[in-house]
Image (cartoon, rainbow over all chains, first blue to last red; front, side):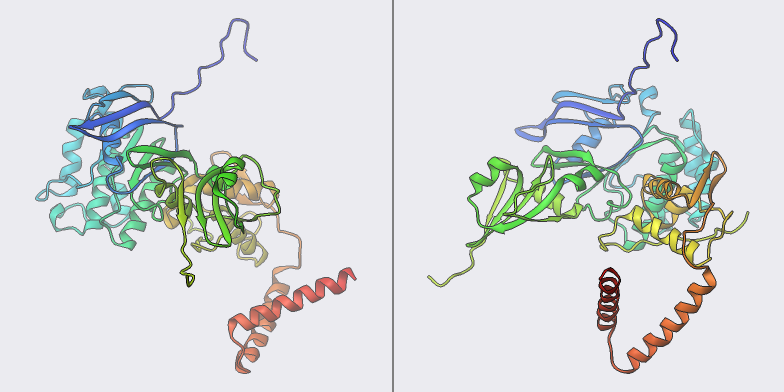
Length: 309
Length: 134
């Protein structure tokens, strides 16, 4: 029991919180009105088509780029190029930045001189566990091994938040699986929140438990994966006018044929209307439906059956 | 360090959630006698390093098994098998598996494919269920 006068502990700061975040390059908005909140300890899939603003968002969160509008907070702190902020963030850019002539061990030694909380031994152990040679020039390693070295270095900082920009895009399926397994093991071991960006959700579905979906420079979805799977359903029934369907539910995508309506919807409660046959939908299909939404929100797809006129 | 007792695998696209696949594999391992009472399940870190899944998925599976009373988590030590699910002992399972194998061999020898065998098994199972409730 708390004594008299004791205040309840304030809720922990979310790992990531942004409000109205926007970034303009010249006339083009790379990111607009981005408001997300991600609790601590999650592994977030930041997904969206190419050019959706994923890299822009990650660079702002890493303190490498300042927003045109709005505000970002990581663990309650504003991203900036200060030693204190940067020591709590691990950022792995798309083009894995390593010195090709140096070995993994040399990279780890350099890191020790630059970072206050450096855990070089853990990095060596981790690379040993996935059998990456630590005494050969990094340039002679395979792409998968180089990615493991970069991940090991990013984790050696013991960051509170780890930001990875398309970390597995260039890897073959086996190296991809090994990279994600190393990442999952690190999450099980140390307290770290992770954001991984990718234009494919398929790769990340097993490892992630949260999704932030960007499309057309805006946030389309920001939620726990289990919750997303629980609330989205595919409804198939005899054709109904789109307007009527939209009034009854939160529609993500409608596909109309001459006879049939197929609707992907976000449901607040289970649907009881016998008009519809209801089926569960996989995460990838849900994400693709959101990605296909046009500026007004809902994608409508009219399937022309090619009826002989 | 003792070698790990069991290892897990996931069938992607099976429609069965990942945590449930882990639950089923542990249940099956206990039923078959691969895991015995007192055996330690792999740690969360060991599992995720093998199958590349979110640590919370493993925790959820272990919680579910604990809820069913099959395993017991001991703080800071690990998760241990504490009970066998009800049903015949492993020796009976093994014996039944062998006779089923012989049956499958003869079904295949007579030209039945896997799909036909599964359909046959399902229809016999559901016929049995109807007979029992009738």
